[in-house]
Length: 327
Image (cartoon, rainbow, N blue to C red; front, side):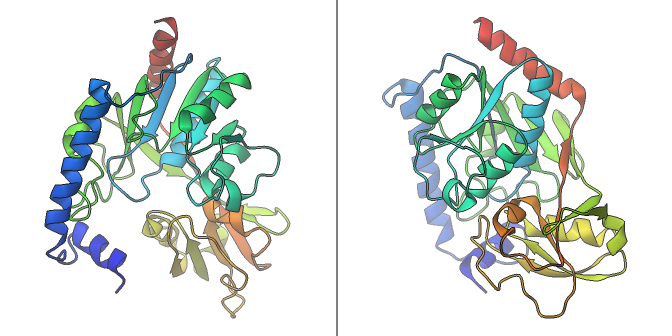
């Protein structure tokens, strides 16, 4: 078993963590606290932009649904009169930026998540210097900035913080990396403006969210059919996301016989990796599909999802951004 698999098993109660993770977690926690204090004290400078900034992130590693939520937030803010843009580090891509995404951006250059958000109709800028990337969006006419996976990026000041929680896995053993899955102590949750629970049962004070999808889209010709058409069939399920099991379990819940093919998050697919030799359908996430259009076999399908949340949540977010714009 690979080290990453060993650690993940320990985090979620399926094994024991190596002894050396405890002292490293202590060191990691100390560095995390020091870093926050340096920003809070002003010894490390942060950047205030002339437009409201909303960050979407999590306190744990792995996929929690940040990208679908970011897309849903951008759509909701547009419907409420904003012109939002998304700033991203561009993980999985080679571009250091800052740079705006243009027509047909290359995921290998800009990262899969920025390309997916851009394809949903929102301006996106990537760069290691996120404040500089955000200024490109402002120059392009955006009046609100959404920082994707920006909760721990303290150099960019924020007006609203949203933390996304995996409703099924929650926080595992509740320990800091590498002894557990936490990027920051759970006390950090008390400082954010909204806690969004993706799946599972939302706890008190959390906003419920679900990922909804019931169709499959053929990668080659764009034909759409109901996902239920695969019920009872044996399919290859491909997922290079933070929590592949979420995708596999969703397919199984529809009565589909899944042959799982988990890949690392932000995996760069190469020719032949999706050819499984038996002619069975290949179902994959949208995040994988943006990288696989030229590689996928004829029987490959993408399963799109959208984040569904209470409209009152989007109203509350918009109200906070309006207040920040006036202050």
